[in-house]
Image 1 (cartoon, helix red, strand yellow):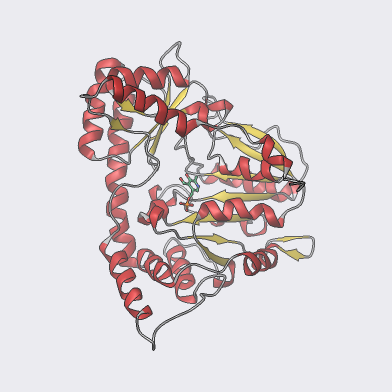
Image 2 (cartoon, protein in one colour):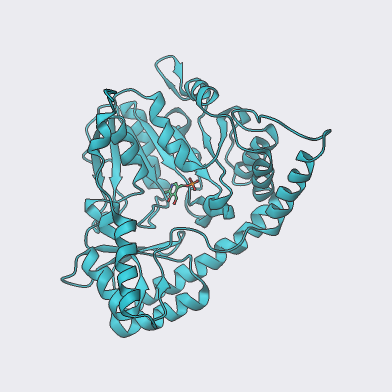
Length: 393
Ligand code: PLP
């Protein structure tokens, strides 16, 4: 074939993080068949869907089985009933958004990956370490990427100090995957003020919002002026256990403009062309999850994970080990033992405690020397893991 391919794909890093983990774990199991492995590397939810969600899916499935209530293609931007639910969910947190600003999707990853379609060749600023999708989707489009370094000095919360005044696209993830750290009101305001001053755009990944307690912003739109400089991408994956159901939403305020062009109009056009909407039962499920009763049920699962996170965080604190997260997040980001890099510490914990973690270097160069531990396992396994770690740390 003589078809020209997108050469930018050659610039993607050969990130073998999860396959390399699997190889090492498989080898360990082969050599130690009677050891009971505890997986604290999981970035996926493990508790089943709340009943209110399952009931909504079943009811919607029955409607689809009936000629009178059957529905075909859904609206490209989502059913109004679900947009109402999203708007009310924000409203209960005193954040005002309009249905026209809301776009329903099959998850945050799709929207984060696809949003590059509507922007030309801008300077891209990405925190490091962070969820790898921002980087890879921009590399695929051949963009010029700059890292904003997270480190112990800034508690893995990079700020705009020192950045130039050129317009740029800035990705922020708060609470952050993998570090679990999150911006407070003052810090987020500094980012919003910087974006307004430099006529930049913030793409705000809010996937872990449901883990946040009251005193931190639940949305970038709590910050004054954010509607003129930010897009918020959100997900039901962690909030309602939808990793296998697939639903999320992106908020693009109609006020957000570059020159005279509304970004909301561009996204509408993009979605209408390339996306045919989320299935009706899934949108009913999301509506149920975001309702007042649904939110309460979802919070029970979130609190279960948060309790695990707190146990782990308290343990590392008692050991005097530096970490971020563990509070307002399912992740704990841990400094490796003196003299160990991320992979060496990963091996040390696997070989001595039969616990699987995730090496921090897999989330970017500035993650080297750290490890991510997650709270998505059972309470029993989390407690057992702490007992084992206590013997080796
Ligand atoms: N954003 C962050 C920071 C994540 O960690 C994840 C998944 O782990 C996603 C987005 C993807 O969310 P979704 O399941 O809605 O595609």
